Image 1 (cartoon, one colour):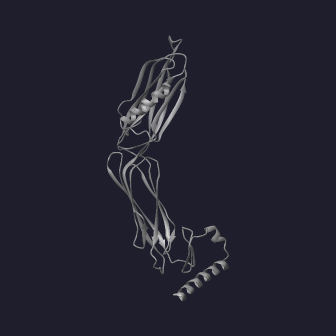
Image 2: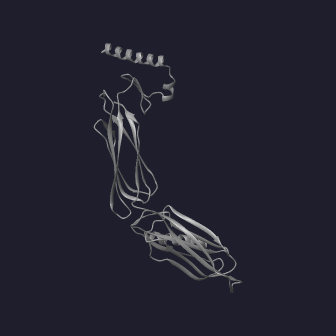
Image 3: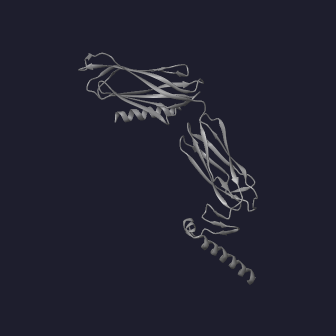
Length: 312
């Protein structure tokens, strides 16, 4: 119960100070005297941002401990410490102790940098006689990144043809930070139209939580005589964790080509030459129909069209 309460208090402190502990790494070790040490730190940090290392120490042994010290040394000038040491004179059996150390990642060489942790305590035999100091060194690897990474991924068919519908999917993924006031736009060329909306807004997208958008593109009915690529552009604008407006875009080219004699559509329909068979049966059923039967079905539809014209 004490460990839980201490952990909650540390987490609340970090949130109130504006530190993000999402995607944090945790190191847990049990030291001599049944001292449980837990260190939580971010595995990556954006340069120019502050971050924190949280520490929780639990005395699960039957002796008291004294002169408990937790100190973090920076390896180089890429990470600057605001406070580096936690210290408590005595910790009774069953007691816990925790706190946070604050740091800043200054603009410097990107890549993995290390914080060097030096932990020590003195065990009191029978709660009276000090024993030799126990010391433990731990390295904390932290990846320094130049800018928050927001990914735009698209899923679309390799090629499309006239007078048909196709799915065009967009995935937005913010790797490092939550983003706010998000707008996603899908800009289509004149050869196609987007069914429904082409602009989407979201109040927040959480860190490492993918957002999926499914849209439908409809190609013009005019036939094309030769294949050519048509460009799409996806644009996302948002506010980052510092309140600055950012924009990211991605261009995608799809191959627009003439329709072949037999084409399946994404909704289960089938084009046979210039005739369209509505998706009243499944794709699996259509695939299983012999070519002769498909040809007979096409002739039957033609005959029905001719009869209809005669009646008029």
